[in-house]
Image (cartoon, rainbow over all chains, first blue to last red; front, side, top):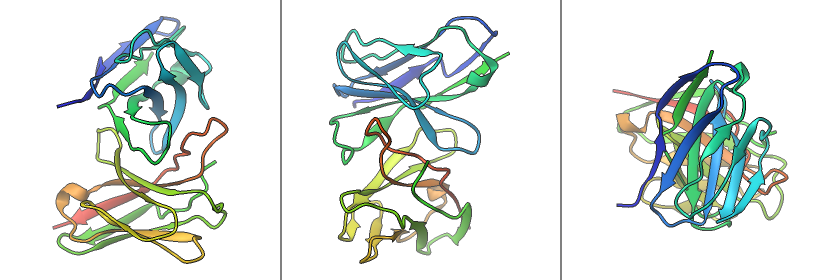
Length: 114
Length: 110
């Protein structure tokens, strides 16, 4: 069965370190998304991609970057981790840019920046 | 900011219908209503979406009022596994992406 996976599931890092979170999907979807979710809040969009070599900034992109070199993967990099980036990170993919098409979410990565 | 208002939390007895309300009084004519849910420690899961007409699928029914200013998600026979945070989403941001609010925490009680 097709799926979307994230790794690691938990990560503790120190302020100032560079961190990369992996996202891999086997749906063969062109569209991929990264969100963060802080306690008691909904999701906020960080970056998204509509295809290979395409990347776009979301609502809260400062301090984050992504690259899309193939269809399956969209790694998220925190250039210099800050305590404000402690959060749960979700990756998602979708078949179409049409929002009527559901987004499939990964299990999330819990990141703690100390 | 999210364009929806949902109760913070709700309870429902197992086996009963769970009715989750959502107010979206500023909805535009071409904006859809989307519902997702998030079971504890998991990624969100799509449930249903609609524009004007009522919609039903294997998971739930969506009832949208005639003036489209509010809607209700109905889980016809709630089970303990339906305990989750339910997000009603209307509108998009400047990137044409969904705007997520805080949702309703639904607790199904035995």
